[in-house]
Length: 223
Image (cartoon, rainbow, N blue to C red):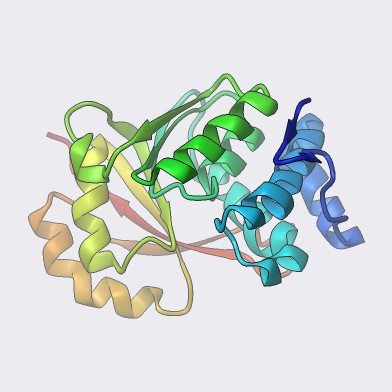
């Protein structure tokens, strides 16, 4: 693998024993690629302002593993559109964990797109395509069986960016926190108007993570 921003991509913070066990379970034979991804996040990702330095100790549990377990909700050989990919969370984490999936990363900021492309090349990920665009600009050009997002916006706004990018019969998978139920209540009318079904809160990673991941799953009605 090459170096990015002068630091080897493999120079990742070491996971705790529990995080390492989780990483081996989630990433399997691709755990070394996950290590390299964490190395990029902790070096060039910090240097270029994609993450704050205080996040380094939490990269494994709070970020990479937290995102990767969302792939448990996805069927084999599916297409995934990740909106507002930023530092590749959740898009690249899912792509590493599930090589059978094809990921479209949608990110409007050039510096982030450049970083994502460098990491994809370094990790030799062949199942990822990056689009420099806002979500609304790629509606009609790409569509996913699943549309993902993390720390992008509240559901009232996020629904308008994600539901139109889902294939009929697909689903939006939005990673959320404690505000998930409140956000759903505020967004119900918007979701229904856009063609979304009844949203539900799903917890993933309960068997491997100390803090499982909360996902709002919104089914998209068939055409």
